[in-house]
Every structure is written in structure tokens, then in C-alpha cells.
Length: 502
Image (cartoon, rainbow, N blue to C red; front, side, top):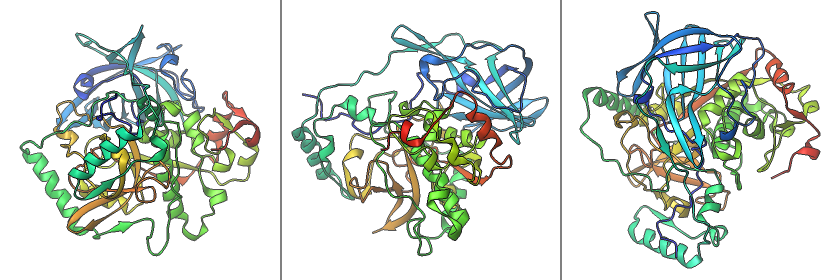
């Protein structure tokens, strides 16, 4: 009989078999930049990206640039080049992005697949992408640390049980939860009965660990951290006591709750729901759903910055949508088993938009707090990551109470494992308990009509660790980047012929 500690939550943010922390990335690097072009390319990656399909790390010609990634304390790293400092951020534990002069860079950290093992080579990158700030020129690049690391870590893949889980086991777990919980209730969902841990994990991709989200005790606060918390409190005190984009000024700006199905697309759902809602807010009464709703399948199956149904990151969805742009949902409807396919003819008379200013709330990975998150919500909903405990899937009502996690800035590795991405849509308070309001992607029958309320201000389940936001603007190229992309190995088709409707 499987243990009652099984983890059935939909997991979706461990897409590549690599684990690199900021301490391993710090130091001097040599960057090798390929010749830029007006046309953005895949830099040899598949669409979507694939662990076993990484391109050879070489360029036909390149110029070398030396930079240093320097630790400034409290999880802040900067890139130093020719006596100037600029933006740097880790992207979870799988890569990093940074700016140098007028260029923006991103790459995944290198890994090798050897037999059943994956080896993280954190002193090198895979082939990555760079552009100038206005995205008018694009190129490919790779990097190597000047002084290589002394060793490289090898890891075995996680193997999940394929044994069906009975209703009795679910009921025992739910009974235990309801005995201990005081602010929320759990129940057994019929659709999970008889499914295995492997099947439930497949619902939203793979993950790095089978363990529960670790409980991290709050340690003594440094002066810098104390100042940050004081700033957060001031922002909280100056914000409204509640906000809910389901009923903002008498209007619901959100798309209906959806079920992502057996595809690890929660990161796509969260990021595209953020961008679609913010687009709706910008257009206000001029918004027309049939015309203005952006496709989720386009970045899901076409972006080289994620791994499709095997997982990805909300921040990279926004970055790719900033580099390439959006297509309407009607041109590539959501499907759980699709390919990079777009009905090109429906793009011709559609207004052109793209994402802009993709960012981590707080400025870089791991720098967010309650106050800054509340302020960002005034601009619209945005994506957050969760370290999902093994009770989360059973939530049905109330204010969920998971594990308290310390800020990433206080973590020695500058990283926390997150497994699920959701859409943060508001906040409030009930009987003295502050909470966040979250739209999940497991259908309207889960939780409170598809939503969950989670404790606010305690970094419950890591919700305040790495929130990700972006804006929507008109495409200054009027669709040129989309057209360029669609000429590069993308199938153009009638929607009915190529896309399976979900």
C-alpha cells in the first residue's frame, strides 16, 4: 500500500534536469556572442525546448566579452562590465538572465545526460539568446566561467509510483487533515481516485523531489532584511484592505477557471492569464474577447524558453512573449497534445501586441515581499509559484495553511523548490487572518469554485518568494517578429485540421 504521505499535486516547474545555485554562478565569465541579425532564431533549440534536444554549443563566429557576476548581499547579484554594474537575476535553478550595456541575455545552465544520470555543469551555459533592448537585433551566445568549478553534481531522475491510489487511502488522508486544520477544510475529489502518483504528476509535469515542501524556520534578521520588512509593512499599511479582480469596480476582468488537463502547463496558464487580464484592464470597455484574447498554445508549443507540457517558468513565458509577441487564441486554441501550429490566415487583420517589462516582483528572483506584491496587484493579477505540500490537492474551502518558508534572500543557496504556478488575483482578511486569493487551473470543481485562499504575509508555501509580472503593449513592429517567427519551421494550418480542442 502506498504511503499516505504521497504527493499528488500538479507539478510543473522542474522542466530541465539541471540544478545550479547563485553561489556556483558567481565569478568571472567569458561570453561568446554570435553575429546579431534583425531576425530572431531558435539558436538551435527545439520548439518547444527538449532536454534531449539541446543544440551543440558552438557558433560559426563570435566575439568575446568578459563579465563578472558579483554578490551584493541579500540575494542580490549584479553583472559587472567595464566598471559598470547592471541587472542580473537567477531563473529558478535552471539558468540566469542579465543586461550588459544595451543588450539583454538569457541562457539555461549547461547539463549533460549520461545514461540514467544528469550532470549539472554550472560553470557553463547551454546556447542562449541575446538581443538589444528594443528587440530590433537578436543573436545567440554561450558562456564559460574563467575558473571552472572543481566538480559537477550528478543526479538520478525521480521515479514515481504507478500504483493506483484507492478512495480509502484518500479518505484517510483527508480525515487526518480535517482533524488538524482549523482555518480550512479538505475533501476527496472523485477524479483523483484510482490515479497513481505518476499520473497525477503528469497532470502538470515533472519535479525535482518527491519530498514535501521543506519547513524552513525563520532565522535572526539582518539589518538589511529588517529594513526590507519595514518597507514592506509601510506598503501594506498604505494599500487598500482588500482587492479582488473578480469584482473590481463592479466588473470581473478574469477568464473563467479552466482545467489544464494532463499537460504540465500551469506556468503557461498562470502567465497568459496574467497577460490576458492585464490586456483586458488596459482596453477596458474596448476589450473584445474573440478578438483580444491571446493564445496559450502558441507559447506552450512554440517557445524555446520552456519545455511544453513537461514544464517551464512564467517569467520565461513573458520574456518570450516580449521577444516574439502574441497571436489570438482563435488562431491556436488550447490543447493538451499539440504542436507549434498556427492558423496564419486569422492573423491578418488582428491588432498586434507583445509583452513588455517582464520582471520578478521586487526586482529580481527572491526579492519580493507582501507589501510589494500588494502594490503590484494594483496593476492586475500575476503569476506566483508554490511549494506544494501533500495536502494542497485536497483543499475545498477556507484559508489554506501550509508551511511557513523563509525568504529566498535568507536561503544559503538562494533558491527554493516550487512545483506549481497559479494566478494571484487579490487579497483580503477573514476573522483576523490575512489571505491571498488565487485562481488555480484544476477546474471549477476544485476548491472554492476553482480558487483557493492562502495565508498572506507568512510566505505560506513560498507564495511570496518569486512572484512574476509583465505588461502588455502594442507591438512596435506591427507583427513583423511574429511573421518572422512563423516562417521558421512552424506549421501553418487550418485550426480544425491541426489542433485538438480541449
